Every structure is written in structure tokens, then in C-alpha cells.
Length: 485
Image (tube, rainbow, N blue to C red):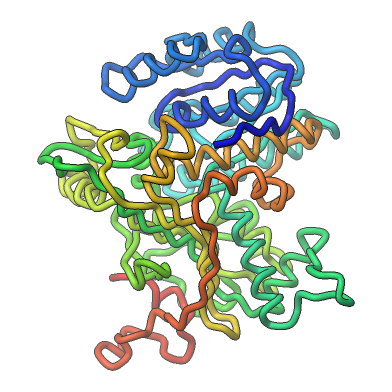
């Protein structure tokens, strides 16, 4: 791929974590930020596995310094502070290192920050001392936004949750809303082209006018290893196994729409915060929903908790609190690669204890793609999916040390970092609050085919005649119709 220097960044970059996403993003930083290897330091825990061995080899091949040190609540400041000065950048692609602690450290030192999800310290996802609400993504987000309320104006930019999802999908939602507005006759202004809402209220009002009732982060990963299927006692995935397992053990969460009439029997509202979301008293790894992508068609996906389900629903609310004038229901509907589905099945059957062996699929992937997008439902055209179709073959041509899944994440990390460098005093921001067009312009060359496709799918298709007593046939867009019991 042609090298394009998006910015000439003079500062140092400290990368916390160097798993699949760190390894995938390093060549993009060297390619597009105008930095030399000497400007980058990696801080990562030592792990005796194949993925970490690959990370050691990659860092050495680029001449990037690597510090093997696990970060803890007791040592993180002492380890990181000497590596950072005002204007530097801390990129957090770790697991089990507190995002809130790192954001606060960066604010105190005048350092830019970006992460791909809001992480707690080790054990935070499953801490038995915490209620399901207390260990939810909703709670983590509220704690991060509280840091924003405490900050002075002009604080260094800290971009929260800017991977593929959460992150890139928030920009897909805005692109999809504009496409719908165009096709429904709401998107043109005096022959001058697209009218883009100027602020949060404008985007929320556009979604309301379009009649969008539900938004799925609809993803189907079909990548598979050549010649070696999952074995018993092994967890296989195409991205961070620790991250996926942690999310899967959290309560299932979803942004809760203003049109919803049936709070699930195992559902509950939080007693604090924006009230934009609810949670279920069951883990995401054991919760499935019906959804649709253009290539896969209808499928059952896991309702894994993700920050975008909360932030998108909150951002697109007209009004506030538990009963706004308008809010869409938003949630993840994830069908991982087939070996990961088998891994989750075994993991749940063993009482949510991780298998003794893990395998991150990268070089051994023989075929497949990641079809990642947003599915907007309930409007006059029924269903509209917009997103990325990235095959493993295309991913390998575009960037080294990536598969299709990781490249969708690392491209978004690159886009978010460029925006932060160009806007260094924005304080704490979520993906929904930054320039979607700028980020997409940077990420798009790495996303394969970006497409928008209309469909006539609803969760009632083929079911109303078989089990009508389980459905709300008066409104197909009720969450109870999407949920798989």
C-alpha cells in the first residue's frame, strides 16, 4: 500500500499492551505518523505463548524498544511516568490495565491518549464483590465520563473506546444515517449536496425523523484456519482471547429504545447515570439475538456487551433519562469465527473457566472475511446495513501482522490517533463526538469493500406462523422479537 503521512508527529508514543492489536497497529503508526522506531516504546506483560513470541520478533524487526513489565495498580505510574512528557501519546491496547488510571495519568502529564475499550484492573469483569450493574460497561463508561466532568477546559485529548467496535461503528452509523436521509429525500440542501448535522442534537433528530428504531452492530466473521480445527480444551479466536472472554463474562448490555414495551424478565435498569441502557442478569456469552448481514443473511449472534451499545443510544437520544422522546435500541449481534463459537460453547459448559490452551488465528488462516457493519432497522426502507467487508487475502496485501478482524481495529486506532494529534486539547471524548468523515478517510483504505445494502429482513420473518405466542407481531422492532430464548 502507498505510504501516506497523515501527520508528522514529533512526540513519543508509548504503547501499553502488544497482543494482536498492538502488533497489527505498529506498522501503521510507522507508515502514517511520520515517526521513527526510536520514538516508540512498548510496555507489555511477558507471556509464554506463541502470540507473545510473535510480538517479540516483530518489535525486534522494527527496532522498537520493548519493556516486559506487567502493569498493576501499585506500579503503573512508576513504570509509565518516566516514559512520558507533555505532548507525547499513550496508546492503550492492553487488557486488565485500568483505562481510568491511565487517562488520569495522561491528563496530569499533558499526554494524549487513546484506547479501544474501557478496561478495569485485572478481575474487574468478574469481581464477585460487585453487582452486575457495578461490573458493566455502563458503569465503566460513567466512571470515565465523571473524569471529564472533573477536568478543566483544554485538557489533553483522550479518545475512549476507538477500535472497530466500539469506535469505527459509530462513524458507520453516521454514514448510514446520511445515506438513509439521501434515499428518503431528507438529505439534500438547495442542490449543494449532503447536509451533515452540526451537533449531537442534530444527529439525534435525524435518526428520529428517519424512524430508526433499532441499530445492531451486525458482524459475521468467517475466517478459519487451514487444516487445524479447534481442539478439545482449546479456545480459538481471531482477536484477543482474554478480551473476548472478559467481555463475554460481563452482563449482556444494550441501549434501550424509547419504543420498547417489554422489559426482559431478567433485565434491569441501572440506578445511576444516563439511563440510556439496561443490562441482563446473564452473561453475554450465554445471550443470543437474531440479526442480518448482506452476505450471511439471517443469523444468531451473541449479545456481547460493548461500549458502543450505550454511547450510540445515548448520543442519539432526543431528551434524557429513562423515558426520552426518542432513543433507538442498540446492541452488538456478533457471530465470531466458527471455531470461536465452539470455544464459547465449551467455555460456558465448563462454568466459564477458560480452557487450558488458547490459539490466536493469524498466519494459519486459510480463508474467510470479517463482515462488520451497522444494521439500521425500522425506517421506511426496513433494513439498511453499512460497513466493511474485508477478506483475509485483502488484509494481508494491505498491512503486515494483521488478519481481517485486527485490521478493522487497527485502521480505526490509526484514524483516532490522527484525529487526536490534530485536536490535542479536546479533553475526554467518545467516538460519537469526533469528526466521522476525517476518521473514515484515514481508515477506509484498510477496510476492504465499504458498502451499504438494503434488505427486507425483520426478526419475524419465517417465525410468526410457527410461534406467534412468543412474538410481538404488532411491532417487529421490539427487542423480545430479536432475542433468542
